[in-house]
Amino acid sequence: MADSLTLFKAIADDTRLKILRTLNEKEMYVELLAQRLQLSPPTVSFHLKKLYSAGLIDSKKEQYYTVYSLRRQVFDKSIKELLFDSSGSDAEELREEMYRRKVIDTFMPGGYCERLPAQLKKRLIIYRLIFDRFEPGASYTEKQVNNIISALHGDYCTVRRDMVDMGWFTRKNGVYTCESAAFQAAEDNSR
Image (cartoon, rainbow, N blue to C red; front, side, top):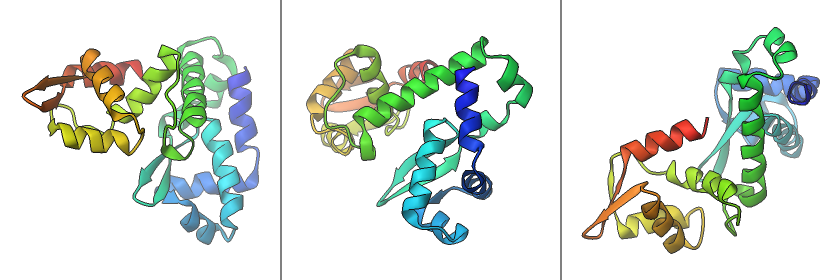
């Protein structure tokens, strides 16, 4: 019931409801939301943080901006499911997503990982975010792999080596190939 309570608390605010309605139209960054809703950017950021923590919205970096979007699968659930199915797989998925977000917020504030988590489960969550930057089946030079990883974490050698060791990449003659099967397995494990 705590998961449902978190959701209901997050939407029990008029400003947050307006933000959700606006994000239902299209994804936006803070300044655009603030302009549309005639609010200050810090106010919008405060409410976006609450909505993100509740698992109602997603964010992604695009150049200099963080773009927010509605997490539509949450809104596909009925109120009855939220209220009475607290022990089912939906509740478990919600708990996992909240855990995932907590790890990301702790180790990647602002979208950059200063230090990798020691615990494997948490480290895999961070690695998964990095792995999402690669196209399944695509090949990359070592320099390209290093550049992509270093945009999210400074120790690109460790991350690159771990991803090869886990089978997420194959390496041959200095070319790294993002394994489609590993990508699908990582996708399945993130759910």
